[in-house]
Length: 267
Image 1 (cartoon, rainbow, N blue to C red):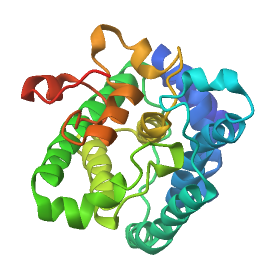
Image 2 (cartoon, rainbow, N blue to C red):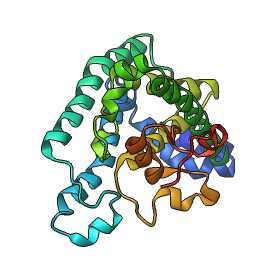
Image 3 (tube, helix red, strand yellow):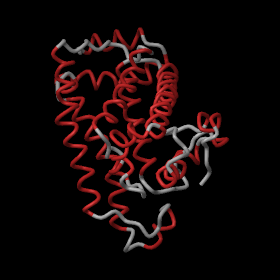
């Protein structure tokens, strides 16, 4: 984008847009990368592995740094290489075999041009929150069905429960059907709400972080469930209990659906 065009966009922007416009201009300047058919896969993998790595390092340090164990939900558990490597391998395999072909099919239709203007800040926040709430409801229904129907659990969800004590890289240790379902819910929501591309990126980053945090096995003073008031957000302790008891805490993030249906359990 030329300097003149950038200035024209800034003049037309509202204050909320001006806050995000420099970031959006920078992303648009990298259009050779962001419009690449490989971008979605690389973005997903690097974001996911990047969020997992700090917890992997903590897991390695925990046996040697006892003070870290007070933040672990299972202080005596540290995932072994035999547990971690298959999880990482499964993530890479599924992105190469399933996610990449779907991305290429979508790209072959022609990537949609990105708008020149950034979204306003408040609509971005509103859309991200709405996407999270919709995803939470959709996965809650999916999750309950795949626990209550033995055939669905056995064929599609059991894989995710092979590790009773969670760790970060186990987040995406799941069947192809489960990965496809989560991706479908993601894309359905941003499409229904007609989200700006920057909003879509922010939602995907936040959704990946929250899912990794849920499976990390660490309960820090700054964990999300401690920052959201009134017990509205379940977080890592909420989801860890699901992995150990199976029949409770089906919602991935928030607590209202489990509370309504009587499946909420406190750690």
